Picture (cartoon, rainbow, N blue to C red):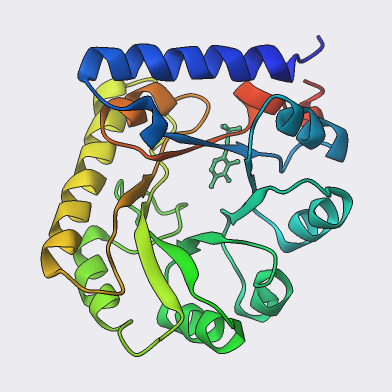
Length: 230
Ligand SMILES: *Cc1c(COP(=O)(O)O)cnc(C)c1O
């Protein structure tokens, strides 16, 4: 089966508009991050040709390889668990880090950055053991400790919903993240405006949009998955 990235992008954009029309959201609030971790440079380029301007990778190696090969002016996102020792290799390439989940990582980002780094605090809303991120209870205290890091800006919160066909579980997960965002905003910290919500992937982005996502991270439904031969 061949993947038509242009058609996929168009389909997703149409869906965004339809959902936003129903719930009275401005579709421009929602940015598509094409997750290219399972595809070639050519597929990533096809996404760019389809008008996608945000690309995301979850490993340092994948990011560095695609960053070197893609000359277009795109905004890079690091979306995977980030080892402290790899920060120096990605820091000048990415504009957003979606996986801030510990102080040692914040410290390293702050040390290596020479400009403000836009970070998302990753939250394990569902409490699954396999998932990265802080527990919801830890988030406020964690963010309060970031004040001393002059180059860290908390743009928002990020989560991954459980992989399930039970929509209610997914929706609750996104709702909880939204509520947590409001709690962070209420602190009125200059370094943590927390305006964004990074949530929603191929199988659940529609629910995420309904619940307030501003960055949806889409891999297989947009660019396919060449590891699986798709
Ligand atoms: C792989 C990945 C995605 C995209 O997954 P798809 O299901 O292929 O859309 C989104 N976010 C993160 C953190 C990922 O690792």
